[in-house]
View (cartoon, rainbow, N blue to C red):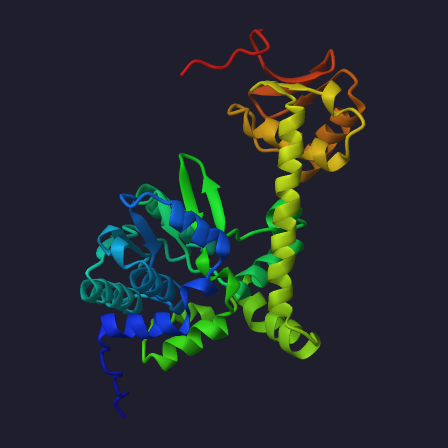
Amino acid sequence: MTKKKRPVPDWRAAAEEFAAKIPRASLHPAVLKYADAAPTSAIWSVAFSGGADSLAVLLLLWAHWPRRRRRLRALHFNHRLRGQESNRDEVFCRRVCEALGVEFVSESWKTPRKTASEADARVVRHEFLRRNSRALWLGHQQDDIAETMFMRLARGSGAGGLSAPRPVQVMPGQRVHLRPLLTLKKSDIVAALKQAGIPWREDSTNSADAFFRNRIRRHVMPAWSTAAADRDALAGAARSRELLEEDEAAFDAWLGELNPFEKKSSLNLEVLVGKPRALLRRALHQWLLDQPAAGDLSRQGFDALLAAVERGTPTRHSLGRTGFAVIRNHRLFFVFSGKPRSKFQRPAN
């Protein structure tokens, strides 16, 4: 029996109908504040897979910000990991953009490995998105908040990891990631799309248990949010994320007031004496990020260095093949291994 095809909608009318069901005021207020202050010349790029969430973002931007339609850009990356299904996703996305008059930019993974992991695919997709956007709009919603929390709890993340995904996330290179749907549940988005007669693409791999997020989504989320919880668990997770982000901002402000970073390679430990361990952890993490020659520290290695920072006594810790973290005179600084160098000297470019 031949599967009956759904009629192709009038995408402009469908976008308006969908936007009426999800009004502008229902989007995340931090994102709305950013959008209202953004220059009209700015290009807004949407990470557009063709799935329900990314399609919702594109349609809402098109409908709620009509003056910015000429500055909208949809970015689609074809991983080529699902054969013709991947190609049909790209065709669908292209046709939606053509109907809306939105610029469509696509790229394919030239040499995908059959054994490519979820992490491998994410790396190449993110690089494509990074190269083609300054303001990148993403389709994460409240279900994604809870799923991310469960995944990061499993690896022992702190407040920074548990406060993701953030509605407005400033990235390196004056880029920003925007997530307007964090106030909405997946079910709300899907229901509004169906009521407006809007089709979307489904990734068949989402129904398999090969990836950790899929296992969380398929087996943990229903048991937690429906069977176990006697309240709106997704809204609760979203509120916890907001509170954790506020705590993160408070610690960042406190660290900024103390200003222990005398130079990028030197951390003044005297101003951190007696402060909470969480603040020392944050300062040490930032100091390590500012050492481009330092190797990656294991969790055990980081904790050992943090304990040394707390003591403040002279010490020397290996940071990979290139150098050491040295504490001397109540300062933490990076010293290159091999030929002696000035304590603030960096390798030549």
